[in-house]
Length: 184
Image (cartoon, rainbow, N blue to C red; front, side, top):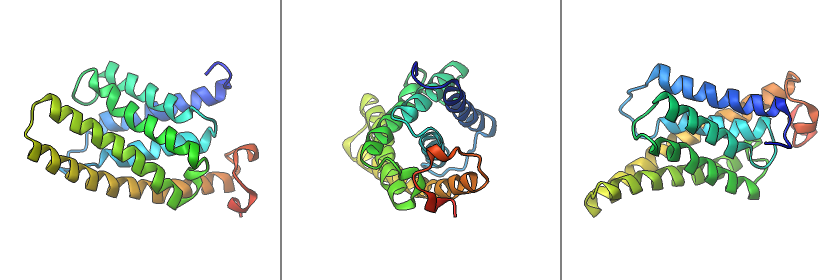
């Protein structure tokens, strides 16, 4: 972040803080697998949409993971950091191929699917560490993948619209927009 501006660092830190605050304050016990992917994918895609430079999603995920670990949000101790970092790294890698994904729904869904796969892989690693049966791991991974994809898709429907509204009201500098056709 040395070459980034202070505004970008504050924005990424604020996004991470808002995400962790929402996660810790509301503590949704919906009983639906993957509902946290809605907030996580919203945060990660907004991080790239608002700070369109390589590494912005990684830094936002790192800050969110460190905040969650320090504040004791979630269960898992130091593994909480992996809960945020694995999807952030996967989204960051997917954004190298689709850099304007936060602005377009279909591209955002592809990028979010990469994040959901990483989040599901983290869950599978936890089950393997707990010596769960192979059948249990397969069922849990399938269920988490389905739930995570549904909620990540909902986030992908919202983020491009939100970014377009911010751009329309000139809250995003023109230098950060992928094209002028988005503001109209």
